[in-house]
Amino acid sequence: QVQLVESGGGSVEVGGSLRLSCVASGDTYDRYCMGWFRQAPGKERERVASIYSSGGYRRYADSVKGRFSISMNRPEKRLDLQMTSLKNEDTATYYCALEVVSSGSDCDDHLLNYDYWGQGTQVTVSS
Image (cartoon, rainbow, N blue to C red; front, top):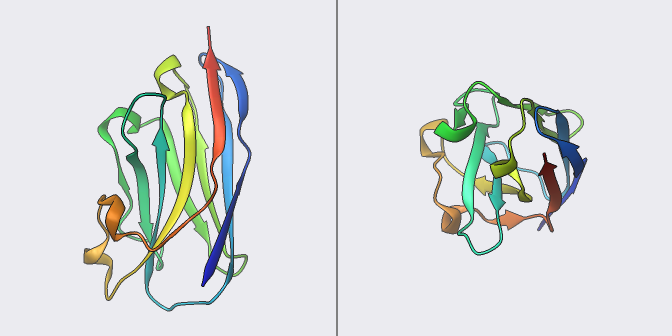
């Protein structure tokens, strides 16, 4: 089992920045994908960004490209999401997730493929 705990959420004004972190504990794997997902009220959960355990295969949703950056600190078992130029539509609960895979090319944006999830952290962007 893997436990994921997110932190760093909060309230920020439009154009502001936040940095989310997710710390993993429990079982360890050699090859895995980690992703940030978000879910706004009344909407489906969507992938925001993902990264392979090597640090490669970084992928972003079109809506956040150029504004968000995902990174991994493997020794600290920490996944970060730097969010800049925040917009009202970025308001959501953000979740960290981990998917055990065979290779980086297996990383995808399908929620059902992710094996472990955090509890989420709220991000609110206001005008």
